[in-house]
Image (cartoon, rainbow, N blue to C red):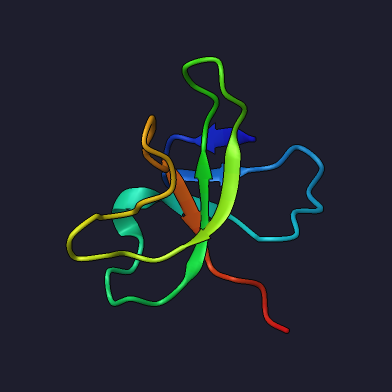
Length: 77
């Protein structure tokens, strides 16, 4: 992934991104709806891509050691 500094989105180098453009986590919905988040590698752990939703008490709870940085909507089925 590479960051587009002008828009705050992430783009894959292949152009074949299953999920579309990744957006800054600050723009993620906080209405309880589910979406996909990306947490970069940290503390010797690999990255995480996971389904997530905002929780009033816990925020974007994905991993105790790191916060998600980007989000994208769930793909249409």
